[in-house]
Image (cartoon, rainbow, N blue to C red):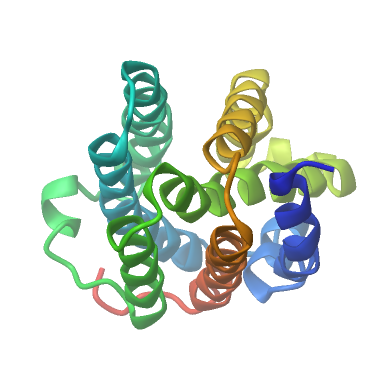
Length: 222
């Protein structure tokens, strides 16, 4: 078992518990209030702005052009594919980036991005940067594949395009690429380094669950 596989195994109970949050249960069964999803899209937009900064730290810590290319590839994916889906739903709700970028991050979101950026900034190099950003990416792939397996009818509802983005071949391929990169970045870590990176991965997985819990309550400022 690779280091990252061990990290995922440790976090899997947290990922599984995400499926039991009110937001994702209602998302899957078609009863989610669109006001909640509207708030989620706003919160996710604000999150992605901060998430992209982790890649900047990854590039800063990079020891080769290949590492820089890997971080750039994920930044490009967030900017192109994830941003396209996000903008689709912003238009659906009559919102623009200009309107939402001045909004505050809710406390759960702020705590998440602050911890993620601190992990990427405060030592640990590429390994810490990878462990800070991978729980979001990998848990989304797992969660939405599981939702699709349990509730295939979700594709026919208003959130179908969103589910397709996270269950398609392109996203799956990127997850595999980044899993391999995470293992590469963590190669040769001593016991203390492995423990620290494992803690970062688990902490960010917990933040993912808190984000889903937060999203069950609509924002009151949009």
